[in-house]
Each structure stands twice: as C-alpha cells, then as structure tokens.
Image 1 (cartoon, protein in one colour):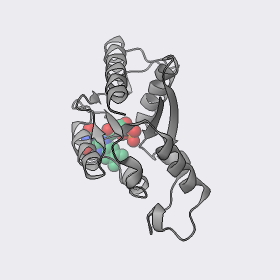
Image 2 (tube, rainbow, N blue to C red):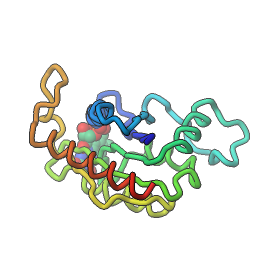
Image 3 (tube, rainbow, N blue to C red):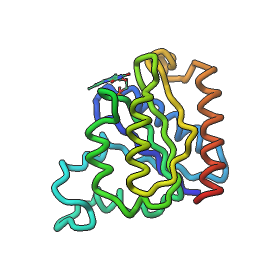
Image 4 (cartoon, helix red, strand yellow):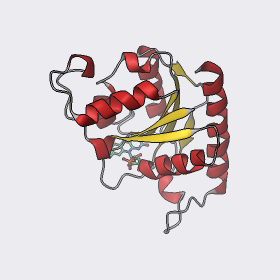
Length: 180
Ligand SMILES: Cc1cc2nc3c(=O)[nH]c(=O)nc-3n(C[C@H](O)[C@H](O)[C@H](O)COP(=O)(O)O)c2cc1C
C-alpha cells in the first residue's frame, strides 16, 4: 500500500517534522506499506492563484504532488497546531487539489509544544478531510510537548509516546486496508 505522509510545518526549526520522519521510519519496517513524504517546507508550493486542475502553468512540484496524491492508497497528515488550527502553509498546499482526495483513507497526527497535543489542529483537519470527500480515520493521534520526546541525538526516547505511535499506525493501516 502506498501511503503518502504530508509534513505540514514550513518553519525552519519545526518540531513536527521530527514526528513525520519518525512515522516514515516506522512505516518502512512494515512490509505491506510504502511510505512517501510530501513536505510543505521542502516543496514550497507558491501562494495559490489557481488550483492544479485549472492552472495555466503547473510547476514540476505541482505535478509531483498531483502524482503522489493520485497514487496514494491513503494519506497521513503530520501537522503542528498553529493558532488553534493547522498551518496556513499546509492549507495553501492542500487547496491546490480536490478530486485527488476523494474516497482516500486519511489519518491525522497532530503535534504541539503544549499539553493538548494539537487537538484543535485535529478538528480543523478533520473538517478539511470531510470537505474533500476523504474517509477520515476517527482514531487520530495527538503529540503533546513534542520538545520533550527526543534525545539530543534525535532518537525518540519517550517510550510511552512511541508505543502510542506504533499502535496508531497499525490501526490506521488496518483502516486503510479495509477502506482503500
Ligand atoms: C504561529 C504559531 C502558532 C502556534 N499556535 C499554537 C497553538 O495554538 N497551540 C499549540 O499547542 N501550539 C502552538 N504553537 C506551538 C507549536 O505547537 C510548536 O511550534 C510545535 O513545535 C509544533 O509546530 P512546528 O512543527 O511548527 O514546530 C504555535 C507555533 C507557531 C509558530
């Protein structure tokens, strides 16, 4: 199953991307899953003037996102919470596409430096997923206090979170396998 992971922060010192990298690393050890990263910061889709379908001159990056989304059996968002929602940069990138999302299983991992773990970003992303006709996996994962989860060498050292992450990923894969 091709699983596209969308990393949603464009900040240079983003913490949520560490979770996206961790997600991909863990998914690589699952034989039935091929994870692919779409990275809002790396890919820098320009401020939206026209959606992909109507774009007069789609860039290589726009084509790349289109192809990845078309081929995805399921989509997993790894998004920080910025001001009680998901970041504008992520929304800008997502809004280029519409029919590409239809009937795709979608999962949400939210990340925050606060105690609530990005729950408002979850709600906002759920609204987006419903609007574009995605099949939202109800069992989202929140990530409180992301700054305390990793060692200085970048190893995920919070075993409780690691266990919740593995459980979430397996449940999402099961959901995606049944509904994809
Ligand atoms: C513009 C902005 C707004 C933020 N708003 C919230 C918020 O509403 N709730 C929250 O828990 N954290 C908030 N944060 C802190 C993020 O949770 C924190 O930066 C965390 O590392 C995840 O975001 P990142 O991947 O961009 O680093 C905000 C951060 C920024 C830059």
